[in-house]
Image (cartoon, rainbow, N blue to C red; front, side, top):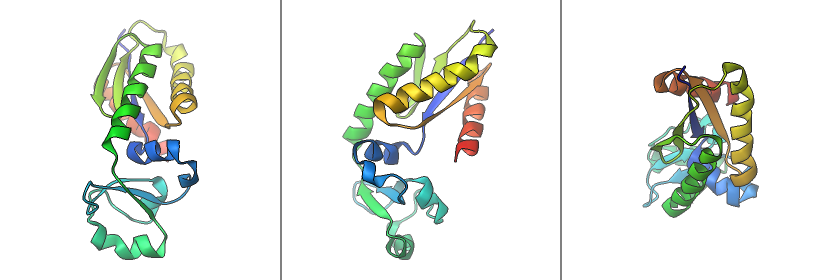
Length: 159
């Protein structure tokens, strides 16, 4: 039976910055486009303030200022380097890894017994967190679409 996992970094761009700057933990953080005009990533704390993805900074300046939201310019080299390290770690768990985006990949576990999936999911999450300090969610399914849906549900319950 086919079994796929979709592993996806949580708030990936923000998490990359938090991995190297731990004082950002639990603070509202947004990552800005290269010119600083658009919000391209948000921490859960920033999301809770009502800051939307792809929102122009000028529209939420009052929220940013009144809540001391930390604004960081994007660092695509950091995101790419972290992504490459994450993909290497995925190969520890499955020889068949399909990169889906900068912060997510499908891992093929075809033939694995379903009763091993919960432990495997925890092992993957712990490996990425322990090694890179990046939180991830893991969703399993018989198809890639179902794995993507399961990952979305995992993020819903984790946030």
